[in-house]
Picture 1 (cartoon, helix red, strand yellow):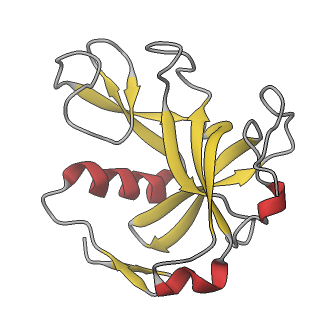
Picture 2: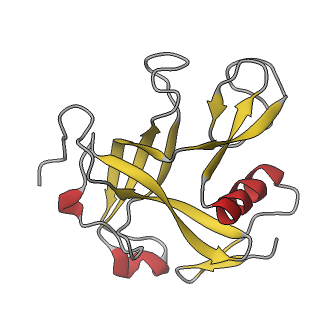
Length: 168
């Protein structure tokens, strides 16, 4: 897979990094969030590693998930280190707890994914709209014929619990 450009930066996934290469390629082909599912214990995992973090199995399959979830935590970036993000500041990076596998394998561990919180036109969601508990869905920024970058966008669904944001 050659490198792709995103916000003026080259994103390169080495040829021998089969986990991530396939993850981004499947996202582009299906516009679905595809995660690895353990063939032994049945738990999904992210990042897409060969070995299951919950049991010793090295057997897995790709599984499509809804891409829906809620903001479990977030960080607002006010000072961009990468030049391509300077015109985006402030922007939110969210930790999303997906609906699948909530409370598994324990109540403290669940299926969580990190990504940018964006609007429908892939601009940063305004900081005032970001809150823990707000519902989101995966959206896919197509960067090439075989690479889509999964990100998240707010939905109109009611929040999980009481929505909370950093005082501002």
